[in-house]
Length: 401
Picture (spheres, rainbow, N blue to C red):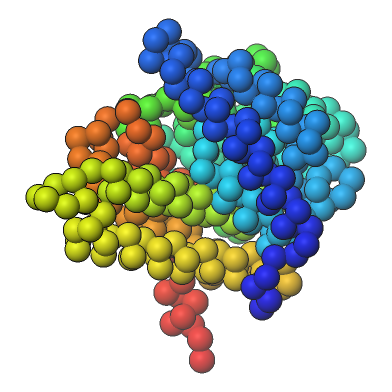
């Protein structure tokens, strides 16, 4: 593997770093100041985000995630990975400002790969243009959804339609009025082999029977778009809304989750880098017991270990991105599971040490560290818990000759 970035990736990195410094970080400061004095609905887009989107499009920093020259920037996973890291430093703004935020990226990838011309025209194009947002319905409150064989939501054929019945939660993005469509995973044939039981279907959020019950808070935080509980009360949609055909849900999920986990993990590394920078800044500015906190041996150990933990995690993610680019999702499955455990835990370790260096301020909302911790702790469960990914890696290793 060549560890150098391509000239194309370097070009985008330079432009994206400038965009972050000139526009995203000032917008973050302004939004936080307004939140403290006026109060804002965190699930809806702040005014600054609309302007950031306009600027990003004007500067050609739009749909960078999609490896397609017609619809996206045409970057490989390896080329896009460092851009995801940069955006991860301001995770609540930068990904959406560039139309590179989950779950829209995964939904757009699904429609790009498997959508019919009609589905692309109705849903993919507006998503690519940033005119609408979307959500993804897989996790269910009544079962352990880390094992898809437990899913209970049904997608039942009825003439020229399908009827969708069930409850989903942690449907990221569903709590905002901008979310116009859900991709819902459910059971179409309970008697089929396990990997052929499930399908994915497009459900307009204004369809009769779709009920957004609530936005589920994450450690007390409400995020942009929310993480909603959604009931599908016998929702009738055209049979043409099925994606790739009945029984193809598992296949679609595997195609979707590989690149998506690269994005999540590189954004996590961006969070870790920001936490390390905050830790160093604080340690250099404070004194305790007659010397700078930065000169205390234990803090120096934290700083040094943060550096090598971040660099190790980054190299592992970049190697996995390279595997997907060169050998495909299947060949990289073990490595995708490995990074999904390593990256969030690395970020959490660094964030925790940064909180410790900040003392009482670290657990307040006066810095972004508490919110960063909540995000990264959640990522140890989202897109598959640590235990499932650890099992995947172990089984692959045990099965080797």
